[in-house]
Amino acid sequence: MRSRRRGAGLAAPALLLALSVGCSAGEPTDDAAATATPTADADESVGAAEAEEAGAAGEPVVVDLDEEQRTPTGTVFRVHRLEVDDLSILVDVEIIVAADEGNITLNSAIGGTEAVIRDDQGNEYPLIPPDDNRNLTLDEGERLEGTLAYQGPLHDGVQSLTLYFNETGNPDGGGLMNQMYPHFTFGPIDIAG
Image (cartoon, rainbow, N blue to C red):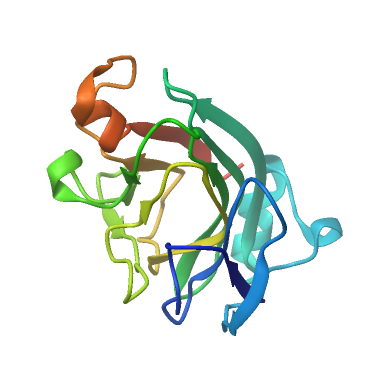
């Protein structure tokens, strides 16, 4: 996957993190190559009902989601797909920061907790952030599209996962802190069928 960006934002991604970043206006430019763990093609993905069978066979568990959340000021966060393999959890996302929102940060303890996935047993899997943008800070009007990688492997017997960004923030609240560190929670996502 190639990393694309326009203006300030994310540059060289971490080993398992591939990002395409660009402003909503104009075409992004290709200026850096990135290495990512390949994901299965869309026709190879399984629904939650088939996930347990795929996981038992040693194959990656892939769940198509296409869930969307919006902040009161207009930032959009979409989670398209989740893949669990032997080493990591990969999440395909798209984030569009509202043009008049200001900068947002998605992986900072200031916003509550750092970006994390938590399973139904209470185990946590931290985000593997890019070295040059560890807080996942995006500028107003910026668009991020790519794959976020979380440290695995999963513990035995996990049935579901929940993604948290700025967990202790107020999902419905306004104010400068909620604008700068917006709260998003996706899940629980059934991975066992």
